[in-house]
Length: 430
Image (cartoon, rainbow, N blue to C red; front, side):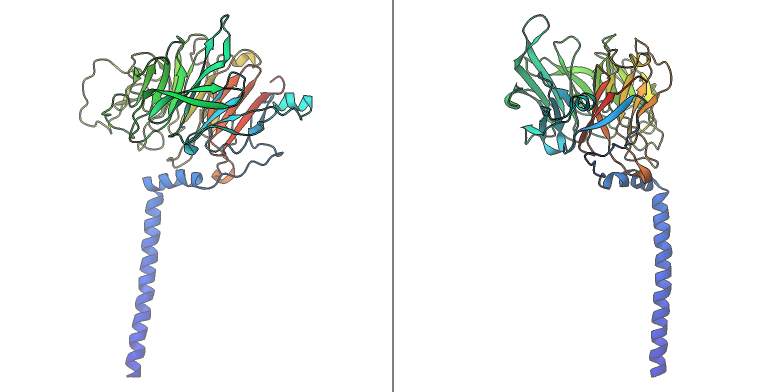
């Protein structure tokens, strides 16, 4: 009996060893399959974003590389999910924090810095003052003040427009007390599905305001025509009309200061691999159809979305003006002004690449300069303007979002990962 028990015990141990070895082999095969599949690409892209951003310590150099003659300063920290930046009529920065449901003011009244240091660094925000709280993903901001003649504005008669996911609201704004009082809903917006960011921009005619509304999906035929579109509304009236369509997710727009054209960044769909489709820079015309979901880039048909047939369209889509590498996630854009900036850069365009989340090798995470002539035509390949948001070992220090470019060689940048606002200043000739 003892021999039988010992033999039975041996068989059990041997079975467990074989089972463990087989399980280990299966586990290795599964892990290998994951990391050579789309799931692996997804994990490679998203894992760096799941790690906490390293803190930006006061008094330490910022880890960014810029062209010679420019320097970066930390203007404000503790601005979680910092997105859109504008100035109020008395030059205080206002910033939206969608995930926090807030809009904050960043006053800079500190006069303790030595004059030379203050001039060079531009000071820093004293504090963050909550203007609005409890909002539904507030993103776009726009300030409009009543005219008092001779192209001046009445600083005490201003309306702050805030684009939430479901509406655009108008608030009476006081620049002295940093308060905003709700007055009315200007227009409602579709709020189902994905892409919750809504961005505002004054139309060049100074009568209308544009609001961008992204698609509800990665790629689909929208049931609501206001999706994947740019809408237009008049601030003194209710409701909005279609301005341009077929734009999957044009989060930011700007106006070319020579031609008056409206430019916008647009993010292409996912799940076509690492290198397709391109993200886009578009010149947005009223009534234009830009092709999504059937076309991307230079009117390339999306055969994965419509492999057999597609509807016949009344007009051809407007092709992209400039293609951007896939998954760069372009957001804020701004044209370089003449005053205080290098002459060889005049009319060039700066674009913030927020960075990929679903690419096997991360891309983006920088600010790029596009050389253009005075009419917006490309004059050469894009060049990096600001890098260092991605550190060693795919450590993500930050993700640039909005760009507020000003005369004098100055630019403010929001970073929704680091929760910070940076000030870029020209320190000398390039």
